[in-house]
Length: 515
Image (cartoon, rainbow, N blue to C red; front, side, top):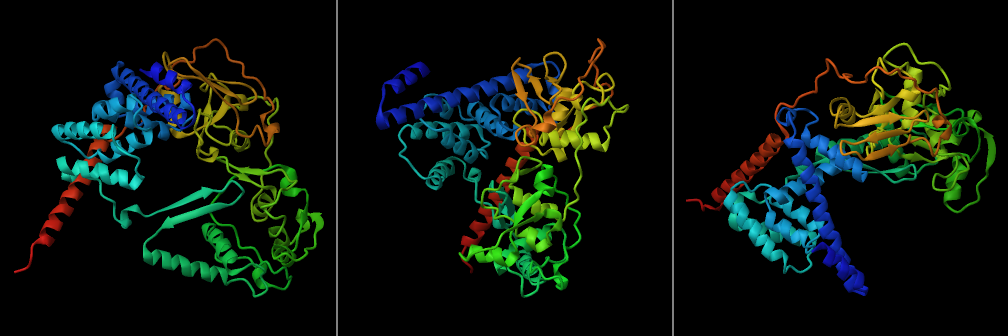
């Protein structure tokens, strides 16, 4: 069947060709999900799998780690794919059959799986599966909202309490931060009204702590005030540039720590600067005056109004741990009130005579790696453990044997290794070569290799005797869950169904006319 779809796509042109390849893509995706489910079955059929179901990193988590490594996905993204795959096999096999034929997209299938998640009665589930499979073969194109409404209408016919309702605003409040890739970020959120009002007034108050000569607009000061609030500052530094301004003194740094890696030239070298008033005049189209002075000699106002962040800069960019780039001018601004620590490359230094690396060595490893070193993981290094690739004490505490692993993947390496498990090998330049349980190899390189290649210069090689590396987790135990992953999912389904039943009962009472 799949070969026939590919053959038809090769021979098609124009819109027909696009549609044919879309069908091939859907059919291939269905087979990819089925392969993931087969991996889960293999893990669950292995000896001791029942015991591992209550591990913090259970069978499901281990499968997702392997799936994610194979596709350069995070374990969370792999988990969502596996959830759809298992639902198609166990709950919606007829919809899965339509998907295998390439007649529906993954996006639609994912929507169906989510909307039908609350159906518990097997007979109702079979009926909904059959009805959806029949309808999918003749549905016209619909918007996402209309698609959900159509699916919900069909579910309502068989199980009214299984319709997923829009949660009320109090349960869906959130704050999201998205990096714009240029050293700035967008902030979106939904708060309780009283908290939002308090935030609005607090921003106004902080924005008003500058003098009248501050060159920023009110909106710019409010935006900077939010940054001051995030850093636990009680005021906003004025940028008027006057030496007599009492509000120009920078506030003391707060307790929030942000790690930024930058070259020496970016922070301490000479840089063109524009004074505050001239910078804002330039933004209005008027000529601005530029001059060159070492950064250490600039006033706070001058440095904060350095090169326009939106313009290309000759200064090398910096990077926040986790991968967000900061253009040189913005990195210089951040450095004005930051504690600056020099990172020292270990070179050929001998190993340290202890398990826990010194702060200097740990700082180097984190700045070299920037993120977790497992394939596809982007957890910032500052939130990762420092792992010995060759377990201590057989493996020494040196840069060539240390890397950053988030707690999830640290547990994976520790408890899902051994025969038929994960293996890793580290090179002197920080490159890590992983071998999965299935025998595939995945290579990860330090996150600093592009912007800070000097951090990836080889360090002293690791020499290990022929002593066995097995038993490195002797005496350690995997953290355990209070309940299994499947029990947690079932509890969430039960909770949502109970809310639906309560809402339905309340609606029925409201419909009864008063006497």
